[in-house]
Image 1: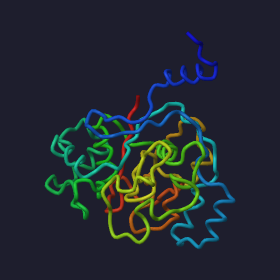
Image 2 (image 1 turned 90 degrees about the vertical axis):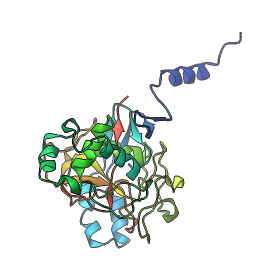
Image 3 (image 1 turned 180 degrees about the vertical axis):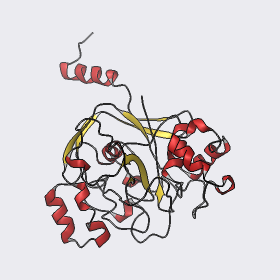
Image 4 (image 1 turned 90 degrees about the horizontal axis):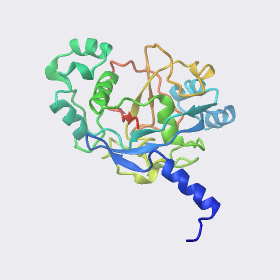
Length: 284
């Protein structure tokens, strides 16, 4: 039998050795895509920030640019599965039906303290856009965390989310360097659209709606100066804080917040509104 060429043999060995690739459905039937270990430049460099300022962003966006500094190398040493799409109303309803709000194991200590103060018949909060395939919004960070535990996963770190969106090339948007309103539900829109409606906006790993529809909770606390002291390998954000980071643009907003490096800056973990959704990650 003819021997394989060395380059083909090496590629075949690498493929067979890869722990995962492509897509899967997790134990709850939710589709996820594999993000391999890798490195990228997180945040935004000074030249790009000056370019963005020249375009006249809203004042509330411009004042947050400093939190994207400095652009810095990040290495993610472990691969992970991330939801292809934002968590839907249908999937969150399954969590509720399965005792999501009454099973203490799904909730962190802080989450249980928050839950104890709520009226059980008021949860989950009603939210405009109730189609089954619309992204589930109007949930607090605590509720998103509990849902993630029910799924056997967790909320992504900011670095994991940003790498899944930008990839090794550190793209400005999931699809490239130029904003394209046709690829995301952001500009001049009146509400959410069903997840999966805009596959042309998928990231390098096939994750969708990372530039719009709903912005998304991640696990990290927000510290505007954190990037100046962030660990290079597998950063997880500050140990404590009062505000949780949200990533990605949202319907009815603008191109500046649809950038993968954007960090929303104002919401504590007990807050939720019609613009905030989430997705989860799972290990190997």
